[in-house]
Image (cartoon, rainbow, N blue to C red):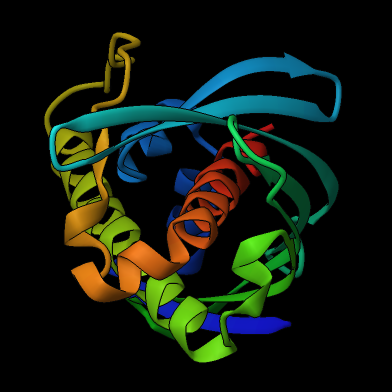
Length: 203
């Protein structure tokens, strides 16, 4: 199953690319996602989520397949798994940057997604909607980071932000309740994968 998403960031392509490769800058952009370990080209992380009063943590792993600085393209393989259950999500994600204007860059994300378990019965439309909402959240946060970095650069050298545990992602804000009940494993898999791809691109 192929999912396509795109968004723009308020920066030239060189700035956008370098920001996406800065793990300290983009780590807070995906709600709930935290990078745990780095071993060569292999990475692990987790996503903290909450649904009403219940909080959960789901694990994922990924590896960087290729990164083309000239073409501004990164390819990542990611895997997410339900902590309690047999459902899995695997994706090959291709991210390509292109210059839209002197001060705006487009990011195209193509996800080749494979899902097993109960979630496999749900259609592409639902998953495309969930992925779109997550990418929109990420893009908004990334735009804020870029604007903040630009403002800081005009005054003083930026200092690395202290590491901190990500706050849990509220799944109730990502998908409508009736849909969420049916596709929770899909949401988890997508959050893990989408969250990890930006961390992987930083290496």
